[in-house]
Amino acid sequence: MPATSLDTIVSLCKRRGFVFPSSSVYGGLGSTWDYGPLGVELKNNVKRAWWRSVVHERDDMEGLDAAILMNRLVWKYSGHEATFSDPMTDCRACKTRPRADHVFAAQKGRDPKGLPEINAAIEAKELVCPKCGSKDLTPARPFNLMFKTSVGAVDSGDDSGLVYMRPETAQGIYVNFGNVLDTMRRKLPFGIAQVGKAFRNEITPGNFTFRTREFEQMEIEYFVRPGEDEAAHEAWIAERQNWYLNLGMRRENLRVREQEKHELAHYAKRCVDLEYRFPMGWSELEGIANRTDYDLKAHSRSPENPDAVGELKYFDQELKKHLVPYVIEPSAGADRATLAFLCDAYEDALVKEPPAEENTRLRELVESFAKSVGRREGMAADVKQRLVSAAESIAAGLPGTLPQLIGLMEDSEAAAIEVMKKVRGVGEKIAEEHTRTVLHLHPRLAPLTVAVFPLKRNDARLVELARGLKRDIQRSGVRAVYDDTGAIGKLYRRQDEIGTPWCITVDFQSLDDQTVTVRDRDTMQQERLKITDLGPTIAARLT
Ligand code: GAP
Image 1 (tube, helix red, strand yellow):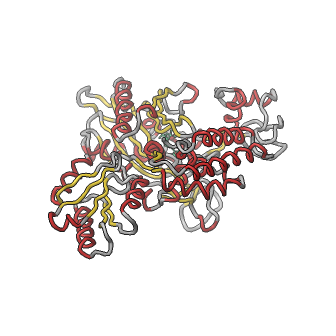
Image 2: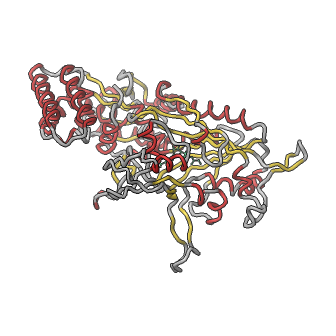
Image 3: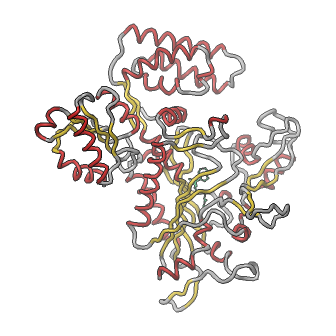
């Protein structure tokens, strides 16, 4: 079964070195994460696959890597200084500061149309503080999400050295539009792609790496003649969906959602979100906006912008006139895409039945857990109901529900119940021996492509051949590792759990005929291949 809770993914990520809580030796820093040895490989593969698809495989795109720190005026004229904000209200009773649009949406069952509507509801005492229930809320005010820092050695105490950590990579592309146009001799339509860090002082970060304050974006600004924008927009919506699907994302987990008028950013004429069905529900993966000529005009010298040094425009040879291109912007998150691919690839399955007495013992413990949760005081009613109904259905279905039990054992709210320790003591051992966790990642995304094992680690000839094989595969540009730290079955399980598509075993026959067994992660089938055929076979399967 696929991952039903984000906790399952968080636990796998921590256990197997994909993602760690940041600064953990000092107790961490809320909602910040570090990518570990396997996580950095996976995220790099996601970014590489994106770059290959939108830059290398197209004839109408260029790449860029602009600075994170830019002249403050970029953010003044882009509109971010004035409008890039979330509406916050203060509760005078309990001194918390919730997001007013979220309070409105939760209590009215729909999104607000803007600040005036939120404030009318606050004034009419129609909204209550989500923490303490008080109606004594201040009018909502916008809080800017941009992080500030200063440049220069001297802190002058005023705003003269103020710069922002960019909240989107897009502006770096706009202000380089003229440079790329001139140096690369481009004609419309063409686009510029960029991957890089962005920073937002999010009020409500959370859901693991889904919403953080520091994240990476993969953005395209695609410049077209005005009038050709709507067709280009449609083409990019199709193109970007296909990218996720071609990398193995399940069709039923990806959908397109048209943003409503009141959701649109200040620069957008239309925006379509690609949404993924994360364990916490359908959520935005990528936004594809029609930004019109808003940004290029905003950064061009005009009565409204006396600070710009010139105009960002294009001379159309065919039309024999200057024009300001329209822009289509497919804007994806590298962290969100990585998380979505992880969730999509995850599978837990029962591979063999445990002995009846072990199963009975486990069922009794899970039933006792359900009763203990039911009796618990001070637990939120929805959490209680979720845990009790999950535990009851797992207990009734064991051993077939062992994969679901793994999710429950990793649930942070379930861990607070004392009897869960006993469930884990018995359950983890049974799960380890009788279930299989697999990441069915596309081979181009998997952190490791090949793992090579010797059948016996104390046979020098097998070890030498296996190590040499690993080196040869690595030299051909394919990520490979050597491992001899356990029995072959255990090594297969470890590689399945991190999504390695192929495991190669060197055995005694290999010494005689220079063949090895290649085991496929998804089918678990083994085939015997000549060592000399390995390189071309793997390369063909990677495309
Ligand atoms: N230039 C347009 C722009 O920045 P956005 O919808 O705010 O649009 C684009 O962001 C993408 O960046 C989102 O679809 C998401 O994948 C990613 N993203 C935005 N905020 C994020 C956050 N706080 N944490 C992680 N990813 C984020």
